[in-house]
Length: 315
Figure 1 (cartoon, rainbow, N blue to C red):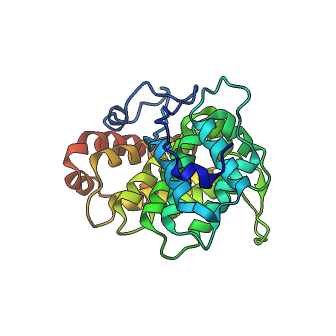
Figure 2 (figure 1 turned 30 degrees about the vertical axis):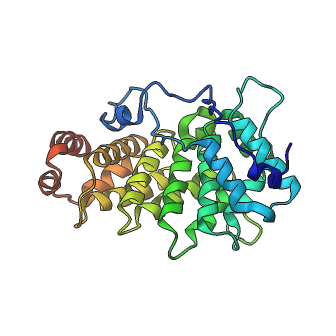
Figure 3 (figure 1 turned 180 degrees about the vertical axis):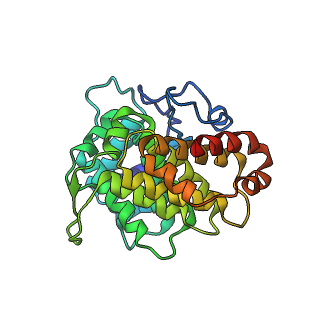
């Protein structure tokens, strides 16, 4: 592999990013966002975000890290790029713990600027759509990506763009069966500096709820609604379903600027899925005595789906 210093000045070929062989690409983003949540019993498709130009992300990471990057890290970055742009049928190329550690070290660094961290997140948005890459994380005891979510959640004033891209990253991790298995794992673990135990699903659910509550960050909140919808597809614990649902309902009914109609569809889809998992979710929604007429007046284009949902939840 070429070292980063030599690669920075060399022109990069316009590589064609490979598509993970098990990722669902049958519908465009616009198609998915314009469709209402599927009825009960039908397959539920996770919501994913388009990825950035992987060649450009790679080049910007090289330029951004520059001479700070040791030769061994430059080689890891080269290998990540090669993995991302080569057919997954190539058995000689695979992600490893070292590759994810390299990217997560960027994410948790206190010295690097947010724009460099965002590039690392954008690289991961693509990588986490690959089952073979996800399988590395499933058996990695250090939990590098989830550690980053915990660190991000500790920030009182997170960078809104970095937070948005992190949510997109976790949505894209839901694009495969392996990704769902990783995110919904209830096995407890703890970080070195934290006594309290957590789990993959606890970490992601708390991150989702925290992001939904970011007042004044409408784009972040609507991306978090998509993540909530994705988390409603696998069967998570009643407690987490109730926790996310309560935050979603508050976001739907609180005063303030309205959500987009697409976001309302996804939000109701998540609530419907969670209510199928936990009867307590429906009970809690009814206990709030929501004025559904007022909600429908706020979202006239979503009146029909709101009416259908309110009738279902009250039945």
